[in-house]
Amino acid sequence: MKEQISRRNVIKGAGMVAVGAALAGMGGLITKAEAKGGSTEKWPWPYEKLDPEKTAELAYNEWYRVFCGAAVISSVFSQLRDRIGEPYKSFPIDAYVFLEGGMVGWGTVCGSNAGANIVSNMIVGPRIAGPECENGAAIGADALEWYSETKLPTFIPREPRQKSKIIQTVSNSPLCHVSVGKWMKESGYALGSPERKDRCARVAASVAFNLVKDLNAWKDGTYKQKSSWKPASNFGITGQQNCTECHGAKIPTPPLAKK
Amino acid sequence: MKEQISRRNVIKGAGMVAVGAALAGMGGLITKAEAKGGSTEKWPWPYEKLDPEKTAELAYNEWYRVFCGAAVISSVFSQLRDRIGEPYKSFPIDAYVFLEGGMVGWGTVCGSNAGANIVSNMIVGPRIAGPECENGAAIGADALEWYSETKLPTFIPREPRQKSKIIQTVSNSPLCHVSVGKWMKESGYALGSPERKDRCARVAASVAFNLVKDLNAWKDGTYKQKSSWKPASNFGITGQQNCTECHGAKIPTPPLAKK
Image (cartoon, rainbow over all chains, first blue to last red; front, side, top):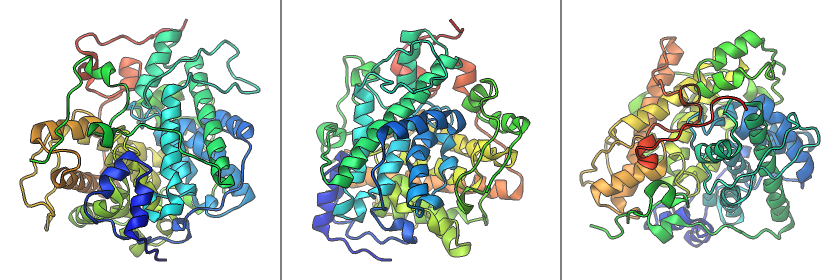
């Protein structure tokens, strides 16, 4: 399978995403995308609108089997496996357990965010595959921004494993370490507590709920990118938006001009 | 396909990874892993030893087509597509373009690290799939630690696109923002410069080289986990190892005891 993509289309697609825009301006190095795989590299993948509530319930329960990242993927793809079949049946959902704890416990990007980006970019496609795929990265970026700015968790499962109140906190960051750390500080619960685990299961469910709303809007043709964080073009470096938390008042200026 | 996994095996597998150990101790919630997919969820995937040098060259050149994360995945899986076929042919490599810039430009985990973890966990399998799969997460954690502690890039391509000297820096972090930021500060080159792009292409190649060395050792039965960073069990929170860079001297203590 080959897909020839014009430079205009690549730039149009890339313009949706900050780093995309920065990279597309590098001088015509991306002039075509040639997919080397089989049917799984033909985008967009077939999609049927899903119930956000049902998807969130699935994500909540799957968290206790495969944890945050794979739970978000499973909540969407398991339904599409049943309703559509391929290419969802060939997608190795359970391998994504490693997204737990911000990637094997290293506290980098929250697995729920990684899972949401995997889902949106698998279904809609990557930006290099043409303008009809530009919203894959956009929905992924929306997930990161929504996660960072929202009091989480928003979703309350029908049959919560923990009956005690799970407080909500705003992370101002898509990173596991920051999100879990702020929640632990505010709630007083330890990482190993059942309450923290249920909080993260509900966060995965909240992310899945929000993701499916965007995917349904995309399917209806009404999706519009909501996120506005474009650090590469606005600040000259990839980054999260909580600059002062690590840098204090002295936020460094990255080198901006060519030598 | 069903795989029944005993609790003993799950705990043995989980013991390889810090957060795994923390999660496995939660009281028997993970008693079995039931794979719902097809042949792609049968681990380990077939693997033939690859040439690290050739793999790194592929990653370097693929960076200019699909960027860091997908370049690392493509460098390994494209060879295995040719030599083995499935399940590699069904894996949608190009969808992982979104890992660029630490996930759509947000500067979270470096895409090369995410790509390495995807590769190792696809081939070897996730920890919940049983003790024969425990090294998938271990090789992924090794990639994160090696990346954080090594002067990068280590790999010099045969035909570099940039002829000028590309300096090496240590990130002390697996995050794109920190790794790229330190290199930019030291080198004086901007994010949009050809030198920064070539640096990141070489970093992807370096990660692919290192990853294939570990996968080959695993295939030979001589692989042993090298990484020792276990923040969940040692510090009570998921995290990276450069604590003082964000927290200064006042590193907070997370809640450790149950309420």
